[in-house]
Image (tube, rainbow, N blue to C red):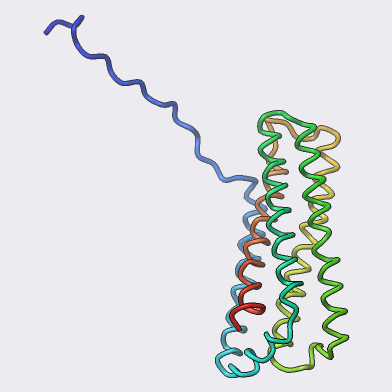
Length: 200
């Protein structure tokens, strides 16, 4: 067989460089967040093991509607922020801004819904001294709300930079870091929701 009749080598796909989205700083923060909530979830399971009836009865008194609303808000805002990242990767600056504004508006629904839920709880005699279940519930959900508030402040900062074209397809690490943090906070809520509102 001559060289002219040899089969051609199949084309190879170009290698895509592997990298961590965002930056190392945000992943250090996310790691600390996961460790913090890992400890809090351990407290939850220890308390639940010692007071199973209190956890069962307590869950029946919470507003599943409020918990579901917060879940939908977190998922929707995460989707909007992911769309913003996707848009800036394609240099669609205006779309990136629109998606990030949408993510901010939806994210702001979380503290509003939480405030309404707390008001509903208090009206029904549910506070941090109503039993071990509610002590753990308030501590865990308030801690999550603090992290979400940091995320909302981060959205505002990144939105300001994005509005002044601080990000482009060549450099969008800040927007990507925000998305990573918000997704991590979202994941934690997706654990909190069933533990308190569904499974207890």
